[in-house]
Length: 276
Image 1 (cartoon, rainbow, N blue to C red):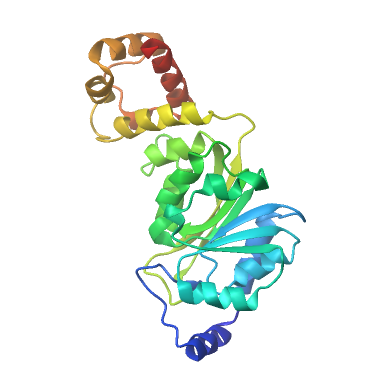
Image 2: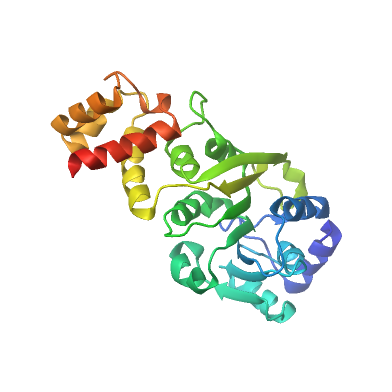
């Protein structure tokens, strides 16, 4: 959708984008096409979209033959979508995505992809919800705040590397495909953006293992400049953590930001064995 077309539509509907809702509409067709090419949706794929807005990405996805489930919070946009996208391949859920039971919603659809220009206010908690599913999406491609994308893709030794990096990369290979300037949105956001790709690994922790890993990682990074030993000992007991460090051959001075994703997974597995 061109800027002039969107401005006309907003005027006709007397619609004023809500900053609190993160309503920044993409007005660059080349970027939309880039998202489609990168995601490579196939006919019959089950796709989840969050924050479809006026449906510019929605329509391009549907043109590829996918079955699309979209979650939209704003009742004005939901009403517009119901009236203007009527194909049987499109299912609209009007709700707050953070209150939707994604597990139940997508259960009958099997393995699915998630492709969206995510509202920035919900991106991190929504991602946390996705990686906690019994069957996380097999592929994701999101437009995100650039800083969030950098945190998600960061590796050990990089400033942005943190708990969210570890939890997401335990399941996905994460890559920033390209950065996106503010000018391709209407209204332009206060920050630059990035298109980030997530490809699910062939092997990854099961849900119960992810729950334990997430708990461990959150504590380990809760005070990232402090030695991890004391933080873990306060939660799991000093005796257990002494055993853990012996098994893992860790120095007590190590900090969370110094451990790789694979080391955290191994550490979580070792701790489970000790606690059992």
